[in-house]
Structure formats: structure tokens, C-alpha cells
Image (cartoon, rainbow, N blue to C red; front, side):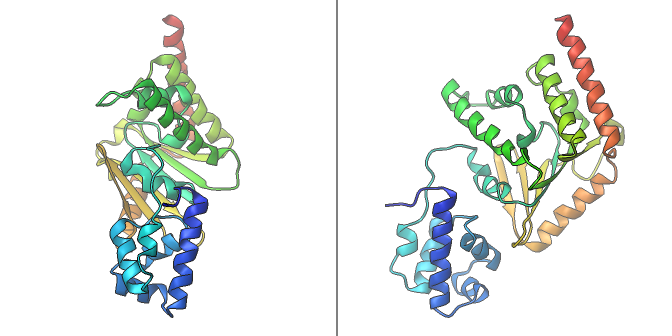
Length: 276
């Protein structure tokens, strides 16, 4: 029977891999070379943060001579709770100690209010049923719980001004959404930056990026496009993404000015809502 896809089962899977690797007298680096996998990937699996795909599991079984154990007990998904391309990044997001995101068009998922998220999840093609949308909504709102305390992670969010100006769900929904961001910023739970239109071209025009750091593992970068997304672990690529983010951050408004701008735009939406 396949292991359920939950943190506890992933931890057990990782513990089994570590035990079998050590029993074989191999370091993570030695196993990575023999199984044709990156050492970082193996470290994440052993830490319970990632699931190997079936090809990885088969190579691990072959190298460690486990008779198909890792393939037979490969964790599988129990229904789609997020877009397929975001599944891997979601696991990292819940474990990160630091998250720095840039959003070009929409409010990042962990900052979305229920009304805003419902509108976003109800859009797109093909259309979703109300039931499908609500399942996705539950997961999206659950992601935001990492902001309920000041323990972890440290979150920086950089928003293109287009995020503030695009009226998702109408004036009332936008007013509530922007004031939620202001409240998180004023409480210092998150640090907010805005890239104003007047900047023109900037280093992050190509799309959404999320940079994540961890207490005991190397950092990763997640980049996303239309119905696609990719987690990057290769150190050289992660450094490039970090450098591009830092370059764009130099063009963004500092923490206090963005909050004033967002508050002002929220007031405009409130006025529009009252007029309606």
C-alpha cells in the first residue's frame, strides 16, 4: 500500500532512506553519484520535504539493493489540493525559515483574503466547479496560517504596482485585500515593497519568483509562468535568481512608502464601493 502524502509519512520515508543509506556505508554525496541524483535532492527526501519520483525511487532501490522497497512505498497524492506545478513548492513553503517573493500580477497566495482567493481560483480555463474551487480555497487559506505567529518564516513580499491596480473581485474585495496587506505590514509580520509603474523595465519583468531559505538545507528558488512552475535547487541558478531579486529590490519603494501607497489605493477602492 502506498504511503499517504502527508508530512508524517514523508518523514518516515526519509528516515528509511537515511537508515538504508547509512547501512550501506554511503554518504549523501556517494549515493547521489551512484543514483544519478543531486545530493541536495537526497537531503530533502531524507528530511521529509520532498517525494522522489518513480524513476528516483527505482534508482535508489537499485543502488541500495532494497528489492523495490522505495518504489512500492512511494508516497502518492491524495487528491489535487493545489495546481500540479505548485505541489513541490508548497512543501518547501511550509518548511521555509525565510521567504522572499515577487508578484507581478496577483497578490501572493499566502497573503490572499478569502474573497480575493475565491475570485482568483474561480477564474481561468477550463472552468472549475464550485466544489473544485472550494477545495483549492481551503488549501490556499491554510497556507496563510504560517503568518499567524512571528515564529517563522520571515516574509518579504515585493509587489508590482499592477497588483494593486487590478480590480480582482471588484472594489470591496480589493479594499479588504489591500488593507489586509497593510495590517500585516504595520504589525511587522511581513515586509512590503512595491515596484511602481514609473520604474519602467526592471529585472523581474518575466514573472513570479519565490526565494526560500531553510535552517538546515540549501536555499531554493521557485519560478512560475502560465500553468507552469519549477523549483530550482542548482546553487548557481538559485544565486542568479537571488541576484535578480536584489537588483529589482533596489528599484522598489522602501517599506513605509509602499504601505502608504497601498493604504491610499485601498481608500480609492472603498470610495468606489460606496459609490456602487
